[in-house]
Length: 516
Image (tube, rainbow, N blue to C red; front, top):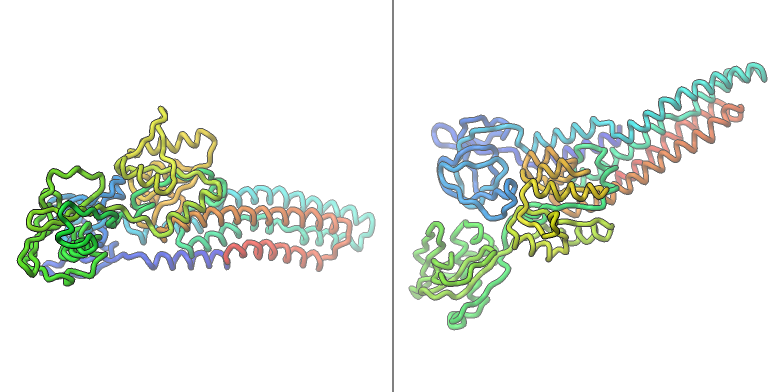
């Protein structure tokens, strides 16, 4: 019970960190904050920039860009205008908008995680069921031994027949056998919950300990989905306008006047829009920003055509240009931002003998660059050619191919396009920020969104199985040693009771080491 309560407390603490409130519009145009569970079809919600859409619906006012990487695996923001459909779980990136709710359901983190907690803590894992199957016949044998011992001692020394039978009944400890697995699994589940990994089924620990091949999604799993400026290329004539760092600072300052995802990423590197004296700032949708400096010169930040570099070679990565008076001065390329701790976690998994393979629905160029950067394999087709930009059926085929080679495989993903592979994998993890359907098909949810916790979970699973084997071994050795002593009359009832209690406590104590 202590292990179970500790696990439940850890899970509840994780649940408490998840936002569940939305802004609902009243008839008079004001807003009220309500629980996401109270949203009904027909409600109009105001969704601030940076917040996820709480339901499926249609934009009624405003325009923005939505991060739908959870749905398609494509990390580029999707433009959204009034009348466009929005999907629950996608992220509003650019500006506050209003939406009319059309479909609601259990697509809230709160309900999903509570369901995971209840399901995991109410389960009898396969290891426990296996121990119970052994405990039943074992108990029947003990009853026969007690009856046989009483009968034998009736002829040897009738005064000892009863207490020998009692000693045999008391000294046996089938409870230690039945507690060996669930006590260890519950203690491990509590430890994982404190680290931000919620198990949907305790059996997953046994399988996770045997995993030798991990498949990983990219966008939203290895990366945060947000972008960062990775390269700044001065153009011919740029030195006359300042150094590369000065031009980059000017671009970051001008970007501060816009809420576009690329502008936000660039502005995060600067000191804010007030760093330069901008005047007559205008933002042209789909093109970029235009402003004048204190000398009246016109600066532009945006697309190549908007700045005056229409003949520039296209880039596979997102980019913006900075120019002045129609002259392109600086080309800024952007790259995805890895989640914190991804590279050490991958190295830890590889050091533990786990093969890592990237399954991405993103563009071939980005998937190849990410795989090369992190030292990952890329799934190959039956013909042996590398496959990237994979569709859900392609990911499923790659995972099944590994399973056909008698490998225990795991999958880590976050989007709707990952749900089939999450369901097919021997053990699967879904990111806590992922879509509900992905979380519902996974064996565990990484609420912390840290890949390091997945690597630690595998090590803890292996430690847990060692503890289970230790418990099983102790329960077997104890009964094998003490039952014969009781049968031959060398263990009185008081010693039998003490031995039985200490055996169970030893099993529980050994399991609770996993909770530290």
